[in-house]
Length: 323
DNA sequence: CCATAATCCTGTACGC
DNA sequence: TGCGTACAGGATTATG
Image (cartoon, rainbow, N blue to C red; front, top):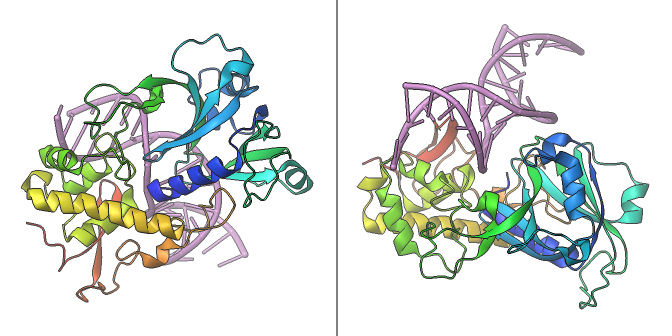
């Protein structure tokens, strides 16, 4: 399931393979993919065609490509616009050169395809790119469970007081993602501020960790892993955490996500594939998630699974005592 | 402000 | 073999 490390892997892949290219056409195979746009597929095509992809940006699990829409003659004033992508549960972005893509069969869960013209912007050649900058490519959005989406969106300044955003200039974000907090790998994030905010929540610590408006990027898998590392029970009330424990939880989440990023992202059931089509393999390093009944690697007690928030929580009942 | 539940979706796993 | 059911889960919305 794409959480922050997986989305970051996709972002980096896009940065290598599609920046500088101009959208030459858009095919939407499933209208659900563009459900966030009132004008649907037509609106997406209208607002993307002719724009150049300028940068690949991520916050938490939200990913967007900045659009240079001068060429499209857009009459929309303001700070600019972006193509916002959320991968949901099973989204993938796959880049292939056009001839290869059109020679083979389409992926059964192909939801949308962007046709990207050659990069004529004169940027330096990426030696790792499977395709040359001068070759047309397609960017395929594949999504089995269709929780993901594509949407064009205008950029806005993050509102004052955005969680975790203290002390740094407010970045521009897509309007529909303006409520999403900074993530733990954001250089501007302030762990002290976040730890205080975490303890200020009157909910269970895991619920607070999963709240994307407080801190973004942590999903069910890394929440369980972070709490195991910090030796904190998922259902411990956040206000009962010591300041030190709250900070440890956040640092643990950052650590486990950095480790996953190095490994290329966690992968399950081959549902997640990075931008080049290579699966991540961090799932072999998970300590508790999906390991019900197995011995805790730290103390040997069996890993337990409990229902929480209509999800599963995995934790060691000996290492992670509820206080 | 906070919690809970429902909603969207499809493939897999499992019991019978 | 097949059929029904449970499960997986992110974000949003509704309701208490």
